[in-house]
Length: 130
Image (cartoon, rainbow, N blue to C red; front, side, top):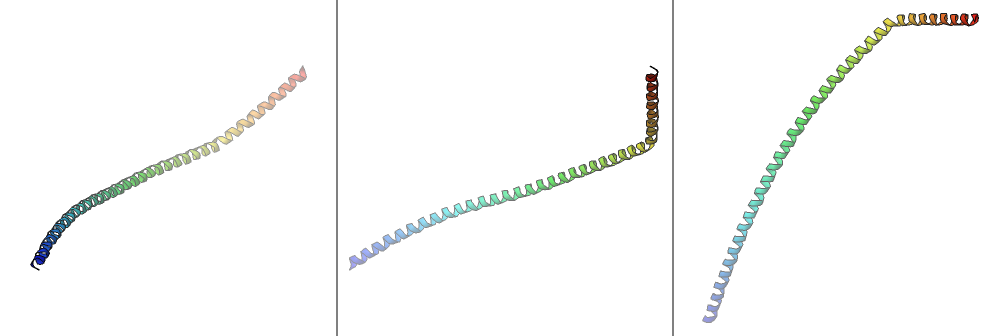
């Protein structure tokens, strides 16, 4: 019986050693997993920082572009207003000039028509003389 107890004690010691080794391996594995988890968390943190930075840059760029587009549109609006004013002014000048010159043009047209009739009469008379 003493041998049996010694054998059981020996087996318990061996089992204890194996359990200690298993615990040691589990702790090492846990440390390795903790280290990996920390690395992953660091990477995620870095990625989050980069995403935040890029988001801020995109926002700044979009605001700059909107400002630039607004400025360009204001410039175009100003130029279109200027073109409209110039065109309107030219149209009024043309209308005023046409109104002023129309009687002169009509009188010249009548004068030319009269001259044409006179020439036609002379031609007819010359043809009749011949």
